[in-house]
Image 1 (cartoon, rainbow, N blue to C red):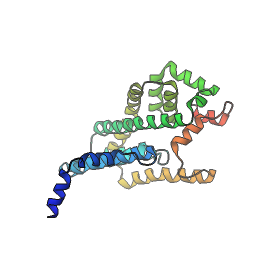
Image 2: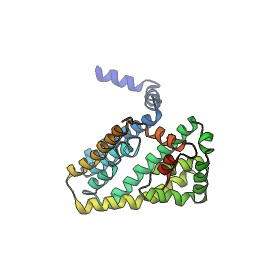
Image 3: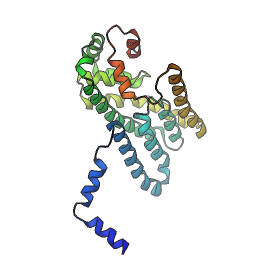
Length: 254
């Protein structure tokens, strides 16, 4: 009787469209909304993979944990993604792990690009762009936008700088993502190669991943900053610093 009732519910007109609307309806802050949906989708896809392809477990964990590590939690857990890559490389080839890691990173960068653009529009992008030193940086970015993106992606420089400059310059998103992938690939491959070569115990990677977050929280407390800072808001505030703000310019400068 219960099974028949459930079947009737599933067969009702509009049932699945209602489910789809429920799953896709925006809830709260879109930055976290998109992240949670992406992570949940990766977890759902990973369930049958783990069941029928047990060897995929490290890659599923890399995806499920890598999405938040590359998203809004990245600035709070700055050392989380690389240990995940090194752990996965103990079980799969560096090329496979790197390829998946680049897909994860580029996907989150696609979301980050839209989220930063949304925040910048909320903050009146014209005000940001009209700052003298920001105009100089945007002009410099516009001369070599693709290779500037690659340069920021392959080096330890804060990548949100390239993201904001690309948005202010109106740079094509697809080219920006291609440059991001090209720049990140050798950097992430290095971590995967080290993971395969070193094969350190898992607890070492956990310690590194969490240790970076603990150190950052301690630094924020010492500086009197909020612990759970909104990384997108903070980055755009830095970009809005008035001309002559030497501290802000040093934060942006390579």
